[in-house]
Length: 163
Length: 416
Image (cartoon, helix red, strand yellow):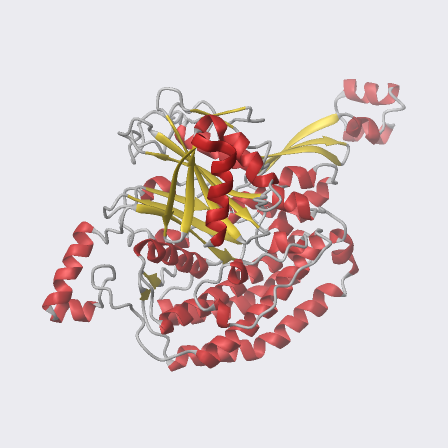
């Protein structure tokens, strides 16, 4: 319980209004951060001597389909020192799905962000190697967006010609 | 020269060979070369493709390419009910299927806020540890085969076969088990199954010692692994490595200890760690983990409580078929669950379990309906593969095989 308050207090003290929302569901703390400050917050969380969130376990996104802020980018980070697990969220709009990359802070985010780009079309600024992870190069769509049908789009994947 | 002309019928080529007297094999290998390894390659454990840039035999850079086994499970999960997705978790890490089943239902139970009865939890723990044994048997066996010790794979698969028989009796399938249910397990472990587990464990010790003798006295095996592919502690954490690969680099991080789930907090076991971080340490660590799992299994067998195997949560768990056919209440709940789903509360949870390959996490976002709004699978093999580029840099081309084998990726999981 104590750890939660420490984290929220520290973030609010250092970043003020950047911290938009704090939720606690099933004993998991998630903090919503303004999307333009994500790298600063990441750097702070990693380097603060009391927190030391040194490992980024996962980066993904949620497509809300009808909301004004259509995408939420979700980061799962872990602190060995406190044995504590934190979720960071950041909302971005549909028209310009762009957010800064945290690869410079957590190198493991490299592939996670590539995967998120592949699946949702979210562009990560300053990413060292932003290519598709799973889908072939030249594929036009982003499969995990809600407007992509589960059965796929006929003709979207180039197949060998029939003999 | 007469002999040579009989071999080479091309007169132009013979002339060139005669004129260029200094042409040696080094000339051919002197320049940088790009070779494509995989996706169809026996030593890449599936369909992993590596593009290697070589200078002679030294790897200058390695570029892993994934996606050859991408089946879109995260997309499929959004169109399925929570119960329908259980069989698909088998196909993630197909060497340790039961661990995936357990991790998934625990994630859904965390979202629902329910808990399975104690006996079900113990059975889950038992099958998860047995499954860890099968996965490590495959890992050790194929790893030894990759670096040239072919006998080992026969011995490990012999032991694995005995565990598969236990799964066959318990779940009705050897490989695609789908054994766990939301709120419990599919069937009870009877006395015959318990005896099979105990008999297996009793003879497993001597089999393990035999395997150790076979490999550790093998100088070729040791020489090929020692000091190869060294991953430092800091790099391992920065690259998000988990599981045996992280512990071989000296970080004693095991989710069974850090965030105990099931009843691992009641079990007495060690977390083996090595500080070398090389391929040999990763091999030894898996052997040590197998011994710890055996220790846990004995404790489970001794402590296994009696009782129910399915939680009494009619709105969230499917009742047994015999009850559905004979009782009105169960029939109604069955109808509601099948047609409308188990409807967890609005929210999102991340649950991760210690799998043979590392930390398998499920991030589930619920909007209150019968389908998950989003499900993200944090697969350990995917994260562990991220270190390949760094480990292969500067290694010899034959070491690439040893490095892939030591990281032990399963592509079914890495590609989802």
